[in-house]
Image (cartoon, rainbow, N blue to C red; front, side, top):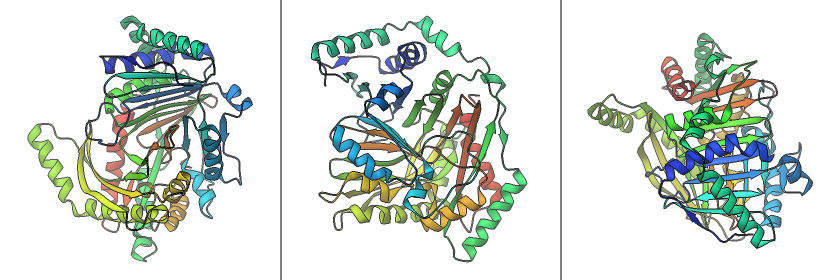
Length: 455
């Protein structure tokens, strides 16, 4: 039930800092073990962003008992189940699709090492949803029928968050014992990586594929005392990514600094914004501008981008109104804290009476993380990569009560399983016929740099 909101803040950045400290210091004592924190980081480049921040909380056992939780079951139709789940609730849903949900969509499999073991599809109807707009309006929605009681609870939560002091912020961020000892190792050696890229390029030369996204994993086992939330605070501060996410699923965590949108729905309009093309930031303004021009005119990066744009257009077409698929922007140069990216925007109008989950299913996994043709690229990914992707290169986001949604691409992320004490970081890049294997390896390290810097 919607409470008598909104509340307001004039210091958006401070409120988000307080909210993260509240999640770290107080939420566990209230027995919430399902947490979604989605942050736009005040990015002005994203004209489609609706919220500055969204927070969702729930208790796993309670949600399971009350049928407010959707968990992927083997051999099930997760997208159909999600549509039915939404149609039943008509409420906020928060969740994710793991990359290996591809096995349900196509005749594929995944047999590589999986150190995190996230479910393939997970959604929950939260008990608490907090939305923060870019103007500072805060709405706190509590699941319940007693309007007076839920209004009191909402006010209590707002007071608890805004009462977080500077000392508590410092205390929260200091609870990181053990983080500095994290020393990730590569699952695939430098030499093996180069060999695998060359092998994939042979497939390109034979005409099996045009492009493939090849990823590698850095990992650590037996990592004790890792503090996910404070680590995310540092990661988020260092990257300021527009699709950042902190997710807790009981004792499994995602710390995501993604710059990429997978798919968004606004009424009948659906939007995808794939990234293909990366270059580092310059040491000064002149160098920064020169690097942006270099990225924009780079023939390899442009070729990669065009391939993925064509793939996304094909993915959107089956559920789109006739002739509604269009490329709104091609080769847009977007600047982030540590890198510049080449981003294109493709949109379409969803056909009337087509379930929105069908549009997600046709577009998943996102072309920027697979390659083209998509199915053959995914087969080769499974053959040549050494780790199961899991939630990496999957998608996290929300579905609103009106049926609109926004989902990111899970990249630039740490995944941690507290039960097995396993930490994982995966990075990758697009391999084409003209790709230079050594430069692709260096690009992987560039993408990993911002994440590795916080541990």
